[in-house]
Amino acid sequence: MTETMESAAPEPNAPKKRGGLGGMLLADLKAMANGMGIAGASSMKKAQLIDAIKAAQGSRAQSAPAADKAEKPAAKKAAAEKPAEKQADKPTDKQAEKPVAEKQAAEKPADKQTEKSAETSESGNEGGQRQRRQRNQNQNKGGNPNQGGGSNQGQNQNKGPAKADQQAEKKNDEPKKDKPSDSNDDNNDDDNEGGSRRNRRRRGRDRDRSRPGRGEPDTTVLEDDVLVPAAGILDVLDNYAFVRTSGYLPGPDDVYLSLSLVKRLGLRRGDAIVGQVRQPREGERKEKYNPMVRIDSVNGADPEVAKHRVEFDKLAPVHPDERLRIEGGPDSVTGRVIDLVAPIGKGQRGLIASPSKAGKTTVLSAIAGAVTANNPECHLMVVLVDERPEEVTDFERSVKGEVIASTFDRQPADHTVVAELAIERAKRLVELGHDVVVLLDGLTRLGKAYNLSVPASGRILGGGVDSAALYPTKRFFGAARNVEDGGSLTILATAAVETGSKTDEIIFEAFKDTANLELRLREDLAEAGIFPAIDVQASGTRRDDLLFAGGEGDAVRKLRKSLATLEGAKAASVLAEKVTGSPTNMLLLNQISKG
Image 1 (cartoon, helix red, strand yellow):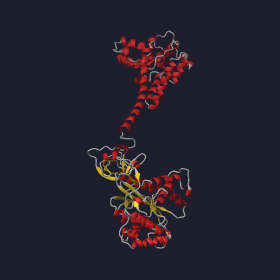
Image 2 (image 1 turned 120 degrees about the horizontal axis):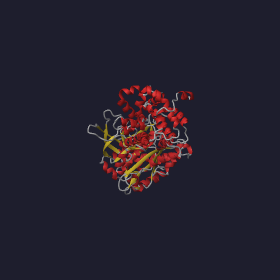
Image 3 (image 1 turned 180 degrees about the vertical axis):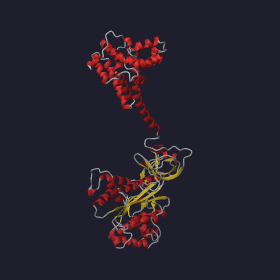
């Protein structure tokens, strides 16, 4: 390198005027352009000045390559003669110098480096970032007074732009004229980078604001939208709500309901919703559940009325004081015995304790038929949990009311969902002042389903029963009440006893003291052919005096007193004979009171 520099070194008296246009200072180029009468030369950059001068010179520009080759050593010597001038003019706009670098590729080796850097700037985002880093490094190195001329040349060969241009710019006596433009270019690059990031963030915020709700579908209705009527029971979960259109279990035809609409109208779980569903528009992605965009009625009334309903938990419960007549015709022995032994009132919380094969299904069917026939004002709901499918079919064909079932071949979570939604539906009807009767078969199986589906609490009772499984079951059974000033919810639930299972025993004991009516069935009576197999001494109703009218209560107590002296099977047999021998209970009680 040293030999090349020495052999190429010109005479010391070589004049500067003979240097090529690329090796001339910016001030010299401006002076030359002004002398040639080029307009606006004072505001032009170096590359623009060179193009303008070459265009003005015309045919003289063809001799520029040979002159540049002869003048290049002079430019290098001139760079060595002034090492004390440390302030280098910052590289001007490289995008403007790119055409000049391409034109001078054959003029000198230093311009080849410029062409390479220009080509690198076209290689994409990665090359552009590398050029910005190089510009920042060159700016820092240009302001460092400790760098020598030789070392600076080597660094500029490796990291910077074209070496000849940087050496010429270091000799410039007017660096302040070019620095503002270069810094502005750098700032523009930074602004472009930062601006793009800001634009991306802004686009993200605008996109979020344009949505109707986070995770909620569009419920706007246009003129050409197709609306289809839909109805069902509202099921409100933690983060979403659905209208169950095919019953009380989730189904493929369920309709999505936004939580914002649920809150705005004050809707509650178990409400009967009638509304309009918007079909997917042309080109719109089909969702799994179509959204309900309009609600026409809630529980058969205007949706605005639902906002002012009283909450079920705030209703005042009182003792049942209005009787549900279970007695049917003269042949309805089961219903007549129940009326005498354990009368049922509106709002009763009754427990039918039955061993296996004691006739609990027959008792439930008799109660359901009597409620439909004798108390048409009551809304009857039969909830069958973990039941045999053929039993479900029998209830659906014989009961004139709602039959809500989850057969034993379904998951335990389905049993709990059916029971919860059914009792919530009953609560909504009570809030409206209706009398509702719920027959649950069975409470023990519901407790087992909760025991398998609820998260473990760590507190295990006997028989492997988690204490957390008893609370939701008690919440179901505890909803039964007679509401002061209108409305009642009667729940009669079966419970398995004498099965030999510790789990069944724990569940029954947990609910035994919560009921205000207990109807005990006995397996030995059923095996003896005594139907109904009701244990007269073990069955009864709390505060039954509120349900009997006039002297009816005294006659019933006299009857029970006469049966108490008999053995269980004998008492049940005698009572069945008395009932069958009298056409009605009223005549039977009159005979007992007179006798």
